[in-house]
Image (cartoon, rainbow, N blue to C red; front, side, top):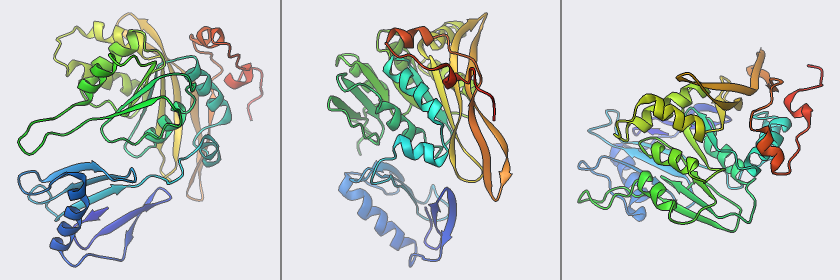
Length: 338
């Protein structure tokens, strides 16, 4: 993170620390930014003072310059691990438990529609990458992203990337247009990198029209907040739909919300695995299947564990019809709490 010429910050082990290095001046930072974005076919100047792009190695780069930035040119690069993070890594990091992974694996294989939610930098895309690795190899997967970050290992994958408008203000291709186009591509699964606008309506329609097992991520503070944001983004489509109709669409499309948080110590943890169980009157009802219980804060580390609530989801029949039989202990049934 470069905040003008003299302030450089780097995130290490989830903590942001300041680097002693510095650029010569703001013109030096501008030259670096131009050298980064020019090969990507982007431009940055006073007429288009910010740019968001993907580097050849998959890293995300964002730059914003004066007059929009008052501290000089600001450059943010989000790097990804050269070797993708695996399920075992997540368990070792304490981000998720083995029982939760068994459950999520069963959900993906039995084509449950999943939304991964959380704040910025909470690890949503990493988790989406891991969950999409559970999709059987014989299914046709179409991914739609703003900047291609997913690294799917399956053979039959089509990757689509949205495009910003050009210098003349033309040629923009939005996530929403791509989601609509994927429906004509005969996908078994649609994976949308992130929903942040009216594309939510088309994603819900896709999930409700036979594209079971689709997945996406979105920014939110809690599972309940996830549903509220989906509702708001659907209203952005301008269809003038009644709120109850939207909630019915959300309740029938989304079956599971996996919520991830970045904790005070910089670690990322799955804090809720929540079933969307249907409508009760005008309210969407939800059931926590797993919950993170924090036991304390010791030596600068959050102490706690993702625990099953003892409740089974209503869609357990769908999982069993897929030939997957989960042990009752996955849901914390029949085991003594430690």
